[in-house]
Length: 156
Image (cartoon, rainbow, N blue to C red):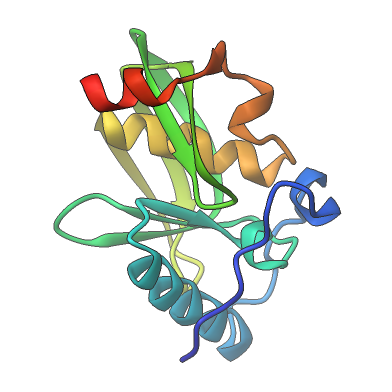
């Protein structure tokens, strides 16, 4: 395993649509393992493959008791709304006000190609949507209402 460099929002790779994963092999497993280590090291909640320079539809989301590996994920359903602060490992030190669903359900494959579904609310729903946006070349700064000020962040 190894840490991967997290690209910043100025990198062209972060603005491209990712290709589906077709090979569930040792190369994918190494990517997933490296992304896990990188996510843990960065104290993030989610990480998408394009953030480490790999244009494939792969996402990790820390749901508290485990880190979900979402390969070729799709958003199945959403419900409700939540407006809140959102940050990104690729936009260090900045936070924006973003409207996201309160609840979200995704369908994805695991590292072996088996399909499964996962759902979550609040932060997990926000993270699902944020990370899946990365796979389509969208960074939260493109969908946010505005950046939050230092005073607003300290008040939370």
